[in-house]
Image (cartoon, rainbow, N blue to C red; front, side, top):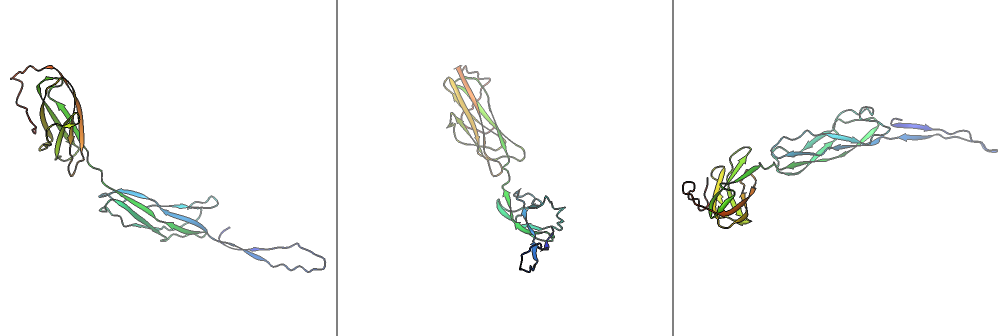
Amino acid sequence: SIVGTYPITCSGASKAGYSIIYVDGTLAVTTAVLTVVANDKAMTSGGPVPILTFSFFGFVNGEDAVTAGITGTPVLSTNATSTSTPGIYPIMITQGTLSAANYGFYFVDGTMTVNAPAVPVATVTLSSSWNPSGAGQPVTYTASIATTAGTPTGTVQFMIDGKPLGGPVQLEVPTAATAVVMANVGSYVITAEYSGDATFGPASASLTQSVTGNYLHNPTLDTDLSGPKVA
């Protein structure tokens, strides 16, 4: 039944010695409560504010928004903007023009999550001038920093088996290089750690340097590579 009042009648009672008088009652059918929820949203700081939407919960008798005769729309708003800093902001919802003959409305606010923009990725590629190399042979390690856009700055710290190989090398162009003489036969893990900068996050790459046998110096191939330097 739709919202309204309906009579409650009674009849059929009898009792010897009594006169039966019937008094009708009323049945009040009130509106069902429909919950209207502002849907949670997410966005990236600096990006566009997404379209605000809502959902209904609590229809009865298998109805939906169409069969229940709901008209109009609620008013949705948020104080989050494209320049908002990362955080949680409310999405407010009020009745607006929303109307229904057989439903009342209960409104639930939502939240807008503003996320920090993703840090652009820098990729490190590490190479060795000689691998394997001989004991005592000068070896140059070159770290190349590639990005999807822009020019990276910062420094590269080269490591050997987890220990610093000289000091940080300033990145003046998208590559940085250093050199070391591997004196002993064996395997060494060489790592290039890019510091990152205001635009790009830190990154690293590693390789295994194999040193085998003794190095026979050939002055036509070798140059002075001692100490850190920038390529």
